[in-house]
Image (cartoon, rainbow, N blue to C red):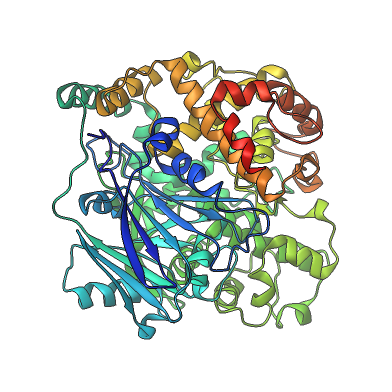
Length: 617
């Protein structure tokens, strides 16, 4: 019996339109748990630097973790992994909602998708009944249209869907995959799905249940964790305001990006605050399966531009991207931009950052309206957001260039990479490294390109933060220091979050590590201690590193552009910036990586049980 898992994976060949069932690989499970770690171990020997991410040779994995489908709070997430068409590196995007638990109820820990269908198809899963159905009529439909049509076709209103919009169909490099209102946003997994002519997956489960090693102890651990997290200030704020609570908090810390990363103050910040959001947009909360936090927000929009009811409202990253990044203080316009991205299937971080780059170039007179289909991009002009988002989704006019990403925009217009806020080709999310130098390390060495969830140093390492990971040698420190201590804590945090990517748990879920260990042990029937946790996390993080090296990543690629380092002239982080080159040297020493090749040492690989993977390089 495989505790924490169903024990079965569904493997689909879209070229041949056939499927089969496979037993979960116990070696992969034992070494990498589930989720992203398991997926990376599977993909690393099947993909390489020559694999075209948008060809039939690429593989898309949908994988749950051991906690998914159980009573564990905030752990319903699943992950989609592949070679990214955007960065050509490790592609990973996780998603909440209800699809993951439903997939487990249907009897599967994950789905492996290979090949490419000749015509558009969708996959219908009803326990052991699996159908690959050709349906050209769904192509061209938005996310909500697709979901509604599929639920009607299958006559099952309780089924859960996973689908792409027009962004994925048109191979926008940062297209998303949507699951009933929640999005797997980053690294272009929607484009991979679109390249395979796979429009959607619909699943309804009835018979299967995740096996728990010690149900009594698991229940006790769950109760203990719930009591803890529901009595923390962070969760109380998230329950009250959702992630939009981050706007004023990050502003106060100098963490909020303003005017494409150039300013430290903005007089209109209150207009996009959580308080204004709650008063003028909020209808009700929404939550993922089994989550007591309910950070999601359902809103209505009814104005001259847009009319939509009961839609998912924008979260912090989206508010910053379509708000402060372009000096837009109109919260309704941000909500509209968010919904358009959700409907077309576009990542809001990449989309907003690319558009903000256009604003910067336009206002610096490096491009003019004739370069961008006659649009005028004066700072704060939110009306241009709507046509630009549509142009990207359908690759119309300037949208065809924007759909390739910020680096492509810069290359087209002859702009130096030092002016473009990307790391390893992925747009930097909206936490300023000048506010916390640990984020420079996080962005530099995130396996999927710049990513704030790989290590949320911006909150976890602050001395005033209530999260306590000291038992994992992740301490509070001076976040404006270029020290080995900062590097060590950030690297350890990366390892812990890598463990989360396999479990797979939400980063808002932060019980004491010892509590989490009790839960994992009672679920899996193991006796992990905290040192085992550290090794598991480092192993998962390191295999993603090995994947990227296999794809062609070199230490020379690990750079931070000056636009993110130039000291601000005002605000709480005035004059501050990380010495990322110094931090990078410390990081390589801490990880025991070779400075020339970027590879972990033989000693490190042996310690982590990864030495056998050298065969693939």
